Image (cartoon, rainbow, N blue to C red; front, side, top):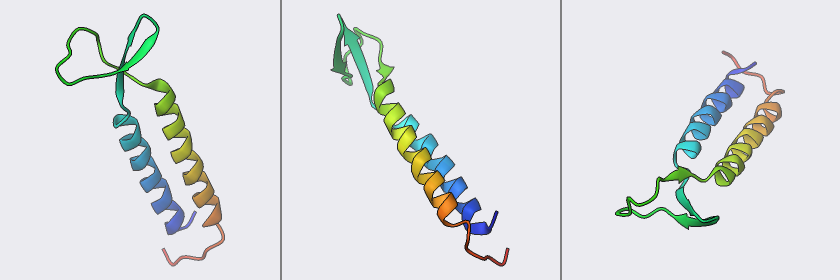
Amino acid sequence: MNKYQRIVLIVGALAFFVFLLTTPKVNIHEGIIIAAMENDDTYADIYDTKTALVRGAAVLGSTALLFYALKGLKSKF
């Protein structure tokens, strides 16, 4: 593993963490998904899991592609 691959892995891990934490919160009321509002305490906010899975898969996929694309580069590390 060269230094470029290490950098890609670190940036990918940070991006994965940030993208999962910034997933929008929603409310589900009688099977209908409603966007969470700032002042509404009637329903508990939950993370939108579908959006989180899509974001996570995109970050992991792009990290893996960059990791293998940089495999052939020589580094002095």
